[in-house]
Length: 253
Image (cartoon, rainbow, N blue to C red; front, side):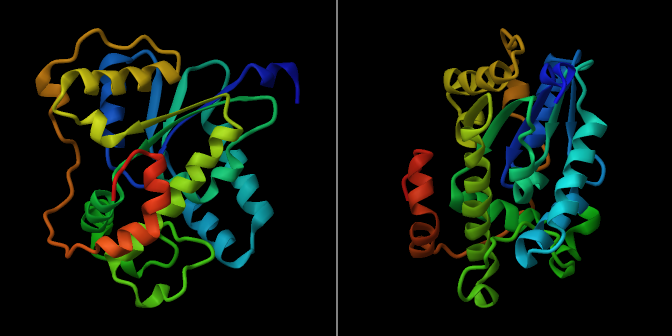
């Protein structure tokens, strides 16, 4: 690795699904227009699908890593401040650290029950929503699959996805130069002090000056909300599947 590459920053906002990430991209667009913050850049979903195949079958290990490097090379350079906001990367987080480069990660997390309800309702963007469940490997999948996976309902599968994706992202704190966790509930808190503290964390991890003040209309705006849906609670599954990791994030189940 050359000295030139050693000065390069690789900066990500990662989460298990989109909840909150579009809002953050709008924040950067408004309050840090001098940087490039890109939400789910081109081919991200296909890279995720390749990662899912790799994780599920053991095939395409070298190809997945090479494609991840190609994806990084296409977007990151030391000549611009670039932040990739990409929930699709949770199946391939192991490929993100790069020798000689400084890795910065903002990890956005949400309560597992609320996240599973939201992501199961949202499923995908409008054009894919009706068919996403029928496209192989188009969603993150735990690897190896939990026992009885095929018989689980979509809500319980969502809980497993929450656990697996957040475990993968959390593991980056051991290799990242900077790793910061921000809770969705704090980012959208009704307490403006708590909310602004969360926003300051987002800007600080990337060495950006945080906004001094944000209008309430911006803070309270929900971007890209999930469709309305009704789910039965499954407290037992929430605790059994997500309890230990949720506790690390200060969630009580």
